[in-house]
Image 1 (cartoon, rainbow, N blue to C red):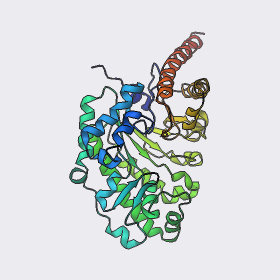
Image 2 (image 1 turned 30 degrees about the vertical axis):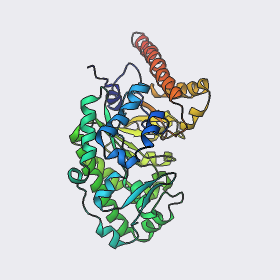
Image 3 (image 1 turned 135 degrees about the vertical axis):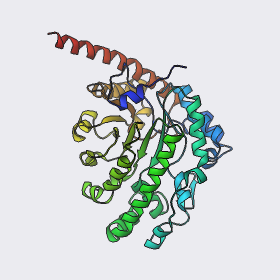
Length: 358
């Protein structure tokens, strides 16, 4: 079986013959076959059935032709192991039965037991490692984003309880960050041990913080996570989520290989803010997929033209796919990115060759 490693090479800043493509939430509700499975099983039930979770993970590889798989899971899965009782409620999201509101609540959190409590996740990774001919990306939720659910008790737009704890009780906050950081490190290390070929740390909501607060209250834990996993050779991606453009200049010491950009920051500006230290991933606005195909291609072309100016670019969305997205449009977009980027890279390398030989 031939193995498509374009995604890995792009993450490492190596030259590729065409851009690799994958989509956040590519295994999800836009796919009619997935919706049929969801009629019988909840998200958490699918996660606990490795064969089924692997089947869902494989769907977009077969249907879209993407260059990487992302594990079918949920960022909340590991928190059950540390003592949090939660459910994923339809049309709401994670709902926490025992929210964290005090030092005593943080003290009750126990160390994660990946092998004991989350063996089904590791088994899913092992199945996929045998079956895939593209790299498998695994993932975890970053401490701020996980904390926002644990403290608020459910999704929030203001993060009032989260910020209140952060500002008012910093000692409690940092203890929580330490425990969640330990959880993430152990969880992701186990993923790679089971056969994961890369991982992404999702910090979906950290853009709610001002750069100073991010640097003070969150960045030290992000730096620790990537530092403690830096012995692993597999590519490491940090996605600081939506509205995080102002945070990019603070990330220069993070030992990640790739930074994911949302659609608000152009690729060249994202690279500038990051000091040229990372490969970048992104950053089509998911809702451009509601437009006619020609409009989608125009937006994709602009991103590709910027992305190929330097090695180290992975085409993706600026956030996750939404349920109303069209599978047919995604398939056509994937083909377009592959075909157009192959032509553009070839043309660019031809121009560079001419310049070298004067």
